[in-house]
Image (tube, rainbow, N blue to C red; front, side, top):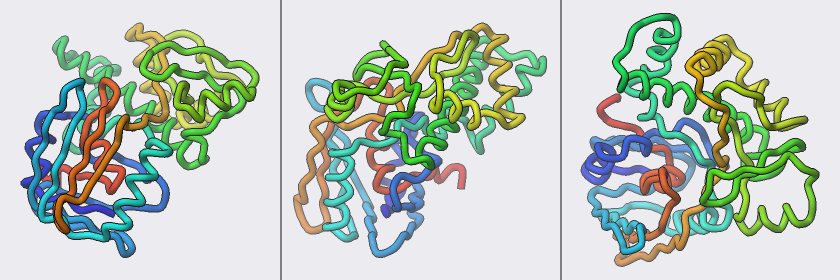
Length: 277
């Protein structure tokens, strides 16, 4: 569980639209962090950072220094080690979906005939795709397979948009999965045949079988977007942390393109945008 106070994260949130307020749990930890000095709680783990700095490192890495930290240092250390070892679910953050999630209803209205500017249309198509991806990922998290293979899996190469499979699971694939050379994937919806088969395909379609998901799928297909894939997991590279003082925590890591610093902080506890509270 983590609390992140407003002064620390608000500037980051404004410039990093996909970082905030992830929607699902990972493991057993759950918390709420708000950008204007709100609180959160889960079990016996607490982290409250009253101020912080972000520094971009050579080669694309990031260093964060959180000050005035209050919390269970041992639990925080354990959680960060778990993230370094296992990675984390590759969610699209809630700001992708606009204030109060309004981009998805707006996308549905657009698909129903409402006229939108070109820039709005692009934003809403992206939100619709992201919402469907998150629904599949949520199903995989619930199933316990967000970082494990299913029969009929489509694999994505690490650091690439290239995919392959399905193919029979083998010792070679298992070894590559452990090395983070490949990742399970889920659809970024569009027209064309869904590439997954068997159990993976069944789960994907079941996760997107509600009326709203069906309407989003049809709208994306009619917009002529193509079926693509996105990795279900990511792992921060070179994740390190140290306590500079009893209440000062320094984190450093590098993330793949399209992933941001507060996504890692979220895995210590979901982050909520105070402007929407």
